[in-house]
Each structure stands twice: as C-alpha cells, then as structure tokens.
Image 1 (spheres, rainbow, N blue to C red):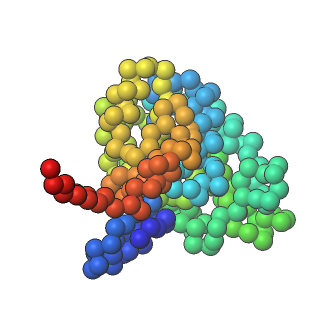
Image 2 (tube, rainbow, N blue to C red; image 1 turned 60 degrees about the vertical axis):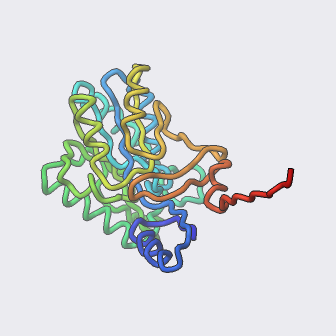
Length: 260
C-alpha cells in the first residue's frame, strides 16, 4: 500500500493495512524548519527561503514552514526578505509571469487566515500581506497575498500546524543548541534546511536534524535519483532512485542442497 497525502489519512491507511499485514510506503505531511545562522550569506538565504516557502503558493509538503533566524541578523534578514516578497506577482498560475497562484480550495485559505489571526492575537506582527486578494480577475479564485510575519513565538498555531499556504513566519533564536531543539520539537520529519558558512556546523547540524532530507545552503535538495521521504510522522519508506524500489520488493532466501 503506497500513499502520498496527509499524516491523518496515512495513519488510517496504516491501521487498515495492519489487519492483513500489508507493507506500506507513506509520504505524509511535513513542517520544514529553515534555519539561518549568524554566519550565513544573507542574500543567498533570502533567495533560498523565497523559493522554498512560496513554491506552489506554499502548498507543498516540503515548503519551509518555520523560518528560524539568528537574533544578530534577524532585522536585516526580515528587511531583505520583505523586499523580495513585495516583488512577487500574484495571478493565474497558467501565466508564466506570475510567481504566486491560487490556493487549492476554500478550506485552505480559511486555515491560512486562522493561523495568521492566532499569531497576531499572540503578539506577532504582519510585515507584509495578510489579506485575501479579490480585485479584478483574482475574484474568481482563492488568492491570498504572500505574507511575512515577524516576532513569531513557538506557542502559535503556525509553529505546529502544517500551513500549506503563502505565510512565512520568522522566529528568533540565539544559539545552535536552542534552534536544533526547536526544529526537532515536532512530530513531523520530512524536509529541513539551514544556511551557514561554517563547514563544521554543516556536519554537526545535518546529523542532529531529525529529518529524512536536509538541505545545507540548498533550498531544493531533491532529484529523481535521490531518496525522497521522511521520518517520525512524515512517513515510511522512500521514493526516488533505486531506494524507491525497496518498498515493492521482498527478500527471499533460496538454499539448494548439493550432494558432494
């Protein structure tokens, strides 16, 4: 049994598969951390997070969900990020000049609005966006402005619920140890990203992040020949490359006796 979709539905299928002991391959939900350390190339990191966060209007399981930025570069990063987000063009996804399309459905846009309302109520500020787009041709779809939230805290819904929309929450951190704990403190474990110019840190953080896929200074560490999948409640098994065949194979021992 193979399935790509939400963690909630994946759990139902796993339970149902248990009755007949079916092997399962599950590519489920994600809540990707995107970490920007104090020694990172800020411009490279900003470009990376824009690409990761707003791909498919934020409606990918591998999109950045929690953007952790070191306190010493937080304000500068937020400024440059806001400048990039303000230039994103929203419109019909079939028009190649647009970077942001429509949300998939009404419930998706309602979830986005609920997460933003919860964050603002608990102290976050909207640096950009934060509203539906309904003018002209945009009235015929579920369009939402690319949104940047600052001063986001861990107790806000957006830090634990998969967003699946064009909201980018910026969260401060002060140390490597602190941000690793924050990044791992969630039931999901699909994709993760971090930016740094410290080679030793690349090895340390890559090993400590509890995720099936890690991009170090890379916002898109995916390829058809590479294994794609997560750990914890983000799934079981892998897609892609020869690893993707493993879930469809069974190991069999055949021993042939030979008379000597």
